[in-house]
Amino acid sequence: MKRSYDLTIIGGGIIGTALAWRLSQRYPRKRVVLLEKESEVALHQTGRNSGVIHAGVYYPPDSLKARYCRQGLKEVIAFCRQQQIPYAQPGKLIVATSEQEVQRLEKLWFRCQDNGLQPQWVDAYELHRMEANISGKAAIRVKDTGIVDYARVARRMLELAQKNGVEVRFSAQVQGLDEGSQGVTVKTNEEVIQTERLVNCAGLMTDRLARMMGLEPDFQIIPFRGEYFRLPKRLNQICRHLIYPVPDPSLPFLGVHLTRMIDGSVTVGPNAVLAAGREAYQWRRFSGTDCMQMATFGGFWRLMGRYWQSGLEEMKNSLWTSGYLQQVRKYCPQIQRRDLQPYPSGIRAQAVNAKGEMLHDFHFLQTERSLHVGNAPSPAATSSIPIADALIQKLVGDGEQHF
Picture 1 (cartoon, rainbow, N blue to C red):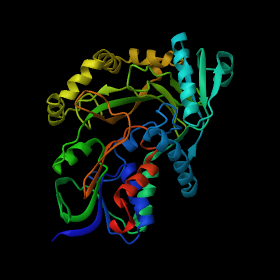
Picture 2: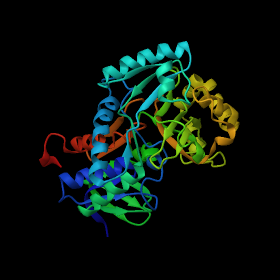
Picture 3: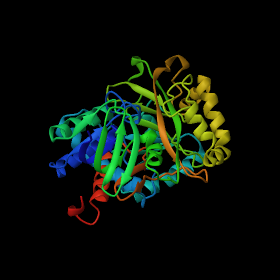
């Protein structure tokens, strides 16, 4: 016997849980179910990141990332206040350690202003006064940047959604999707669901589920492992702000930074290492299926052709900690190799197109009955509530009567 719903959400990360919560607020009479393949929510990207509430420094002003991040910062903080979830706003320092980086920092200064922020330019003297353990020629201070436990936020969103009637299925592996004129049939390892609408928020698996429905996404998810270390407790006061390097514009990631976590600890990371599987959180983890899919995708080889040097450097620094350490010692020379203690890694689900280009903005696919969150890397957690609202608007379309 098939179970029937108005909407099925696949994926229990922070976007899926935010969507379930916002839907339950706006449409409390709708029959909604959330499917999560794990035993609880937020076990992948949502629970394996720096926990930063981003202010929106780096993104082009006309991008979805810039717009959703600015709004998301306000909404995440409002949610935390309302639900009494601990958060903090220590602010962020982007530190330049060379004259070339100072020039790049100046460009970031203008980008901050374009994005409606109020950056503070910090010279070397003022930087040392603010952060005695941080070395640099100049910095930008962004006071709005914060920290939170996003897994806790996601769990609370789901609790609220469930109170409003949303159903949840854990350990629900989606094995088949079939879209017809009357809706979508979802086959899991335990049941068959008939749903009028479906939203795919599956993160690392989003492109596979889209293809399972017969779509042909113009991208493929390529997994990059972000490896972290935690500093010993005696160094919990090594910095008062979050400390970021000036990103290299020729590289797609932000670089290794120091993050004050909400539990009081300080982490170092992440790097960006090509992973041998979509859930390969350690070097010893390997997926033949994932590797084969990457190897047969032309965009993967074009991407590697563009970034092979930095890719090899990331791998070397991952295998030999001295290289990783050198990156953080550029701006925090006090940290020693013995200070780098183990900490869980994360995987960034990065969409790459057939040309080998990373999709830098949020990206969605839509059919008559389904909606797919195709690319949602950082700052997706910060932007989760605006993304959920945007998804609802896409579902509603031309009018409430169509949903």
